[in-house]
Image (cartoon, rainbow, N blue to C red; front, side, top):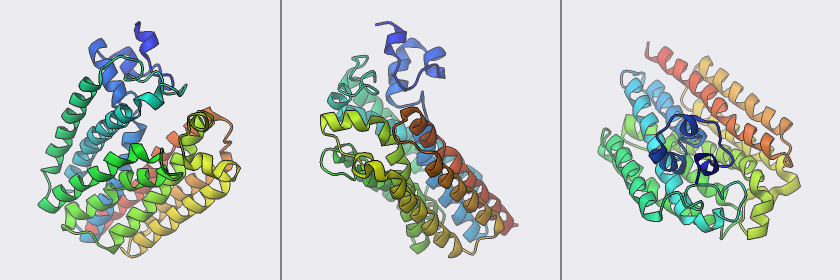
Length: 310
């Protein structure tokens, strides 16, 4: 098989296709290092909570190291999660146009090789966790329960995006756990707000596969909401903004955090206005743009933390 034919259908022309060694390309594609948007989206709640907790503590001395460790951990664990997802979904992926060129259904690597790479990435994540307190280690490991069951949810419920939200928002707890060694109400409210955000953006993402999913019997909120997706996004994105604003208000944040939240909310509103569910390419672009929505909020929280620690 030529490398051109080995490329993943919805991710071409990236650094993996052009610069990575040939032997490494299937593994990098398996872990989505060729399109790291999922890692960034997993990282955002981690960074939000780290910055918010540092602001509450009026102490940013450990924040730079925490930001770096969360970055490494998010990319490693997102890669491991993608490997697990592709192992469990390899037969379904072979029946969907967008995913049939992934390394496992395309036969570029074996299940055993994929499992070995998954373990290697998980060990990187464990090394990151071990840099924190004991409660953080336990809390981080606990997230694997949700990660393990998520790929199976699309087979049994119309709401697999909720389970993705539970997994992808776990970082909203971790910043508080790392900083204070506990999970308080503010962390839980931030977690709930992030879950609502994930449900929204992954509904947009799932509209890319809605037709194929219907043919093979895979469930999603995109199929559930259908023509009412805009109204559902108003509900979930609105809920995300309200819950995150409650978390921020309970933390006595200053104006930079409020400005970051306003920019985050405006970005989500623009996605709803622009969305056309029958345009897969637009759905993909809007989904990807959530990285910048998350970074806008993080920037506000980071400036707020620095100001409060001064």
